[in-house]
Image (cartoon, rainbow, N blue to C red; front, top):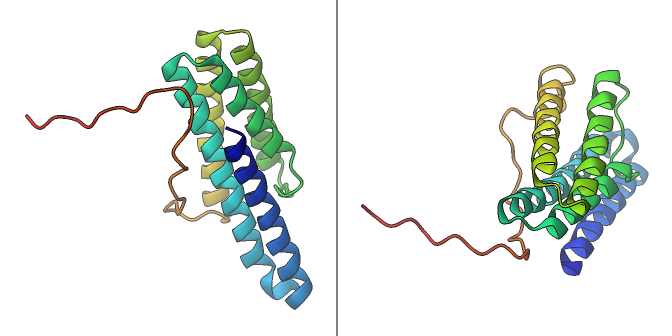
Length: 165
């Protein structure tokens, strides 16, 4: 689990370094590309964290739920995740952070129903934010270009492939 956290941290640092390097090298000309690179790394990290939460919910693994919530909260407080100058976007970002803290706390309290409900709210905020970024701010593409998160090393067992009828 520590290696996943280190991987997320490394991805965030790399994205931040690429963003700064691009801004220093060519000024405003490379800022959008560097910003897209940083945002893509952050989105992959958030996706990996939410994957842990889902896996924890399905496996009744409260430690994994708590870790996923903690990671999502740390990402939300990261300076690499630049806040847009938009009140609606700021609302969604704050909602993600509130739900991440709540999920982590409910995992610690071993409250599966509460954590499930908080995750649904988190997912709703994510969908709303992506719609806003895509349709209003025009900063997200219509077709997600995210890579699948790395295979989780949580305690849940792997689901065997479905049998042919």
